[in-house]
Image (tube, rainbow over the protein chains, first blue to last red):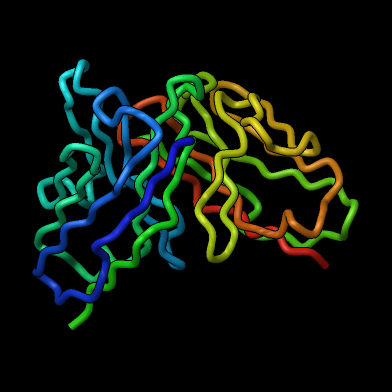
Length: 120
Length: 107
């Protein structure tokens, strides 16, 4: 069974950094396409970025609002989201997801999320 | 970037009603369209992928259709547990984008 568990959220000042971690189990993280998404009451669900399988080069893509500030990587069984130069509009619940091959890029498994609050 | 526009932004319907949510893409996305359900305090859930394929375990009262730029999600007979926000999302090209969401409430 696929399990995803995010951690690392919290309160940070604008301009600060946070490192979110998603502990994975039930599948080989290196063989999976993975994604991060976030939810805010004001803007709804937003896609943050993705990382391809290691055999596909492990390349990454990002949404425009976070490009150059956020970095997705793998660390053994953990998916990492490094967030730098945080802005108030980055506040929200952050989810890691699997990107399904069978579901034609549908985000088919989600963690419970971790709350990020960017405020002075 | 591909813009996704959902309508209506919210709706209120009675138990047993048929509910239809629409999603329009700013350019053709073939059938790379997914639907999600978000309930308060819970992780989002994939309901439909590839425009019309129901994810495992999703009740058959949910159905979806469309291709190109216009898509619909239908709940044939509204149940209490269907109260949620529904989002469409295109996975045709990065950056992947979501619609603004449709809040479904029970009258």
